[in-house]
Image (tube, rainbow, N blue to C red; front, side, top):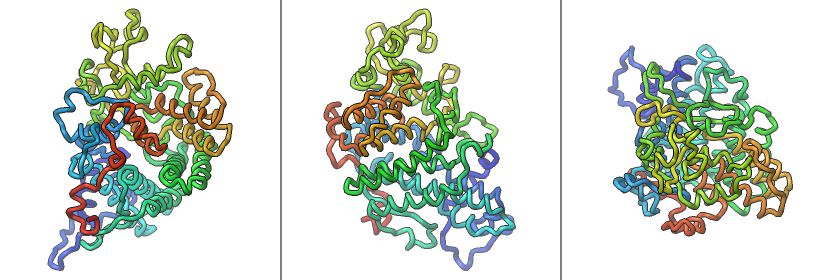
Length: 506
């Protein structure tokens, strides 16, 4: 959507003020874009859609994406510790220590960015839906609305996963009264999300039908994968209805598998270091670019935040011995080496990183970088393949949904349903890195393997905390990690600003 990036700043300005009541004394300026005269052709519709995409994962600035998202989604995991610099920022460490309050800046940003995304998506849905056939062809109209519905569902799901209470925003507010809206039940929010995804899915193209210029835009496979994920998460949230939710999750995840549109990338590590973008495994991916000609900076600098200080990064996060123990627990079973995903996720003291003949820590060995006696466990994921950018900055795409996730979620559903076929899909993920087949066994044996594979695949990909919570294993793992955690911290409190400004949220 490069051609539409130039419109984003304008769209954000227009859309952020949309729905404000106009005074009868207001005068229209003929050559000025307004909400009333903006939605006039397909290019404008696509520009509005770009604005709706712009709020994905808060990818609109350093605070939103790099700092706030990272501390929310990484620091709450049981396998990490903050770097020394993190303790200069109480609003970061409050997440690690689970002593955050409703006034925490990262919590406020999470709420704000997703509700802004909902507002932008609603404007696309409403305004593109009103566009005449002379302004936009029917196929394009349906597809743009479908993408906006997916995004609206995505933003609601993001909020639902982090807060116990959610306000459904299903229309553009036209008055102050519309803004004051109360919470819906979790069941109502799930139904709303699923309805949007189901309505979007038929009008979205297959991956193969997306031209290269549309990389990163939503496809049918993305809608199907998220339908499967939402149903799976709902099963963890509502045990009473779990049987039916597993049935639905299986249906949608199987649709992704049966489409044959995706395959596992044979080079796991390159999906996270800037080498491979939109790989055959990628179902939905946050796009980044260092191309300054677009008129905006679409580079997150997440690498700087994640990279160890010993690697010239900011060193804000490191792995724990518990993480390394889990990742190494199968031993050297891959042709005399550990699981390749370990080496592609972490830097740690091992002969692999201390081979002077093939120095793999940016041309050095572990001992040279971290010290001869250091036991540092640093992250290799999300930092560039070569140190050729100042401060390790790079435009590294972020996969938000991968085919490996579909396969493991599908295996989890099959295991919950008592099917021995679950092992087949765990094995498929393991074969990517030439590991032995998964082992058949009872439900717990298979589940333990799924848990392990999710650590190997998705460490530092924002899933661990939510996995533990939906499995009912959050408290015990936090205790094992020596973390200060209480059940009331499994979700965030409603942001103070929302409570103050919305009388229905009090």
